Image 1: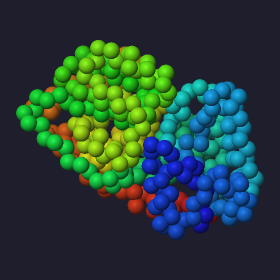
Image 2 (image 1 turned 180 degrees about the horizontal axis):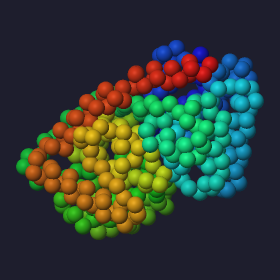
Image 3 (image 1 turned 45 degrees about the horizontal axis):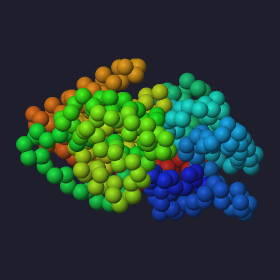
Image 4 (image 1 turned 180 degrees about the vertical axis):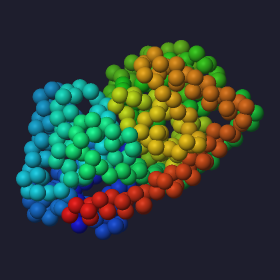
Length: 352
C-alpha cells in the first residue's frame, strides 16, 4: 500500500515522524504531498492521502494566505477527481491562529465532505464534528494519540527535594506563541514569589513577541526565559528538571495535546484545562486539570490549581513525581504507539 502523508515531518513535533516511521515498518510506502504532485507516476501509485493540520493556512500577507488556500482546495479536488481515498486526522477544534478563519473553516468543511475516514484522538471530537455535519459520523474512527516514549532519549531521573520547601519547578515547553496564554501564566506566577520557579522554553513566534513577553514579565523574579529552539536531545533534560509541566491552553481552539502525552511519556504530570486529551483519561488519573468559561475564570482556575499543586508537594514531598510515574504507566498501555499505528493500518485497509 502507498500513502501520501502530510506533513511527513514537522519542526518541534515528532508526531508525523513517529507515525510515518512505524507505518513504513508495517509495510506502507510513504510519500510527501509535494513529491506526488511533482511526479505523476508516484501520484498514480498512491492509494491514500492522509492529511494532518491541512486546514492551517500559513502566509505573511492576506494574498499569500489566499494563494495557499486556493492550492489546497485544488489538491483536494484533484484527489477526488482521480478517486483517491482521503484520511483526515482532526487535531484542533479550529486553527489556533484565527486570522482568515473563514477560509480555514471552508477547508475543514471540505475535509469532512471529501474524507473517506476521519481519525480523532479524543472522544469529544466526535460531537464537534457532528455539529458541523451529521454525515461525518460514519467516517469517524477514534484512535488515541501515540506516546513519545524514547523519542527524545531516555528518561532522566528527577532530583528529590530535600525538605519539600524548595520552589515548585514549573515548565512551559513548546512553541511560544500568543494563543498559548503565556501572559496569563505570568500573571498567575507573579504573586507567588519564591513558592514557584517557572521556566518558559521554546522558540518564540518572532522577535517582537519575544520582546513583548520579556517586557510583560517585569516583576516576575521567579520566571526563567529560555526562548530558543530546544534540540531534541535536550528535551528530556528540560522535562526531568521540572516538577510538572503547565499548559494554559485556550479551550476555544485546543482539543488534543501532544505536549501532554510527551509529559506523561517522560514520567511527568501536568496542569492543564480539560481539553479532549485530558477528558479521555480515566477518573483516577494523576493530573491537575481545571475548567473555565472566560478569561477571568481561566486566571482564577489556573491560580487555584497551581496553589493546589504547591500544597500537595508541600504536604507530601515527591507526590508529583509519583503522579508522573502513574501517568507514564498509563500512556505505556493506552497510547502505545506500535498498537496505535496498527490501528492506522486497519483504517487504510478498510477503505482501499
